[in-house]
Every structure is written in structure tokens, then in C-alpha cells.
Image (cartoon, rainbow, N blue to C red; front, side, top):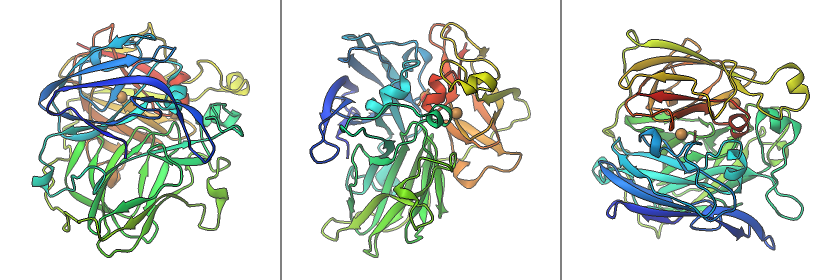
Length: 449
Ligand code: C2O
Ligand code: CU
Ligand code: CU
């Protein structure tokens, strides 16, 4: 597990972006970046209903930003591309956190450099906690029965360095690695109690989509989506998780037998980037094996029935409609390899000095988002939203909770209420969370005032 940095009592935490070295394999000594440690960052736990002060120091030699993905905070402390932290600089935002308990995350968002900085390690998980998990009957022992799992893929050069080069398909489809990392580690195993275990899953990959399942077909009980808890658990046999998304599931290990969390191949790209050599198991590969250990006390044996959360049921009739299309480069731009700013949203490629639109604080809008040529995980800053429909049909079960990122496979209608302010010098972003697309211009910005 990443170390837990609990800021619920102090209301204060410090992060330092720094360079380090990581031994991913025996004899490797790879340059990596992290927060407070060589690679990735600690799990930050913050309390909802109180203001938390962050101090973020940049000890790297290039500018970064630190965005709190999933925190509902005003634009001027959101950590988007406009809140640059210069090398040697410190950024000290005050975060007025007031939202349902949820698993969110933080990562760099420096425009044009996000994909590379996240690959190097500038990402971590954040828990918004309300102290009620024991009352809910949910596993809550960090690293014991409450596991934080950051799923990422990487490639390594023959010298063992993180391979940041982009092939032609990577430029178009987003980076796909050939090695899976869970919490920054290759080939690790989770040892768990013989009871119910909670997995807080984050897809922190640049572009890979995981089609998760358990190798013996046992169910996954979905308890929370991006924006927090559901009303009650939903039983699933498969879970698709796209870049930027978080899902929390409960898995029952009480029968004592081990199981593997596995994934199918990236559904966005059937032609390359195969994991595990496209082996006999229908192309499925192992993400993480679990080994139950009866010497670890099992705290939670029964599936909770009432999680105290909610599934959104907004009224879309009064909402104004906005249409957005996630556009891939076409024609000559595509032939030249997709370099430069050729990805766009509704024909407009991201520009730091162009605000795409403004919404009125308190307004409810219905956004119809359509994807071109492939699936795109679409994310909006500063809100959680309801999925009204996917391709005109009721949302799939895993999308019935509160979301801030949704995989658009065709078209998605969502409903959002813009409660947080974002002025013109600190606007909110909306973008594809395939980081190569985001850096390439598939992003826009809006104000809330
Ligand atoms: Cu996770 Cu705008 O990002
Ligand atoms: Cu975000
Ligand atoms: Cu995209």
C-alpha cells in the first residue's frame, strides 16, 4: 500500500514533488518521480466538512500543477493548468472540502506535459472521509481489509528506464504499456483476511481501459463510484474501468481460496499492445493475485445492505442542453502522426488563453457528449454528474452512481449542477482523460459565475 497520510485531525498536509530512483525489477534503478517518495504519492486522507490546507512544493526542474481530481472545490484551488508551480516554488491552497465521502485522486495537470509527468509518477490517491465507514459496516483498516489499488501500465527500455516514447498508434490511441503496475509495483500479491475486503480501484493509466473480473467468477459488489457511495451494493461479474475513474468493490474471501483479479485486453485497441502475449486465456491477463491468510483477523463478514449513499435521480427537463464531440485528428494531421494540437472538442483545440464557455453558478445542464472513432473517458472538473443515458438507453449499472468521469462509447447524456465558482483566471477543464489526447488538445475550459 502507499503510505497513508492522514490529515483529518490536523487539517493540513504537505506534498513535495521530487525525483527518485525505483527498483522495478532486480538490478533496475530507474529514475522516477513522486510526491514525498520516489514514485507516485501517499494516500491522502482528508475530512469532509472542514477546510484543509495543502502545501505543495515543486522540487523538480520543470513546472507542474497538482489537480485534485474529484474534489468539489473552487476553480482557483482546483490545480488545473493555470495554477502552475514553478521549479522550487510552493503552492498553498486552502481546500474547503464539503462533499460525500469518496475516493478521489491527485495528479499533475501541466498542459502539454500531463501524460509524461503522470507516467514519471506524479499521481496519488486521496480519500474524502466522513468517519462513518464502521457504522456502514464497510472494511476500514487501511492496507488490511481496505486496499487502495492504483492500476497503471508502463513500458521499460532495455536500460530499465521508463519508456516515454510514443509509437504512431500511441499518438493516436494513447499510450499503452506492456507491463502492469499495481501501486507502482510489478508482480506483487495482495495478502488479505478471510472475510470481506474492500478494493478502492483507481485507473491511473494514461490510456488503458481494464475489463476487470475475478478469475473464478466470484462476484464483485460495487459500493462506490467516483462521487461516493451507492445506496446499496450492486453485484457485478465484470467491471470496466477507464482512465481517471474510481470504483470501490467488496470481494468475499471467506472461503479461503485465492483468486486473481484479471483484465481483458484494452477494448480501444484490438490490434496491438497485447498484454501477456495474447495467451490462452482468451487474451486475459493477471492484474493482481489475492492470497487469503487466516492469521489476519477478518473484521467484516457480512455484506452491508444500506450504504447510506445515493444514486442521482435528477430532472433533466428544465436543463439547458450543450453538445460536445470528442474529435480525433483527421486527414493530413493524422498522416503526420498526430503531433501538435490536433485533437479537439467540437472543433476547438485547447488553448490556455481561450475560455470555451461560461455557465451560471447553480445552473443544471444536460451535456450530450459524443465520441469519434474510439472510446474516450470524458471528465469534468468541479462537479459530479448523473448519467442520464448511454446511446439513448438507460445507463449500465456501474454508471448509475455519481460520476466525474465517464467512458463515452458512442454517446452519453449527463446531467450536472454547477455549484462551485470558477473565474476566468482559474477556469474548470473538461477533457478526455486519455492523457495523450488531453495534452494534444482534446480539452476545453469553462467558467462558473
Ligand atoms: Cu484527472 Cu483534468 O483531470
Ligand atoms: Cu479533474
Ligand atoms: Cu480521447
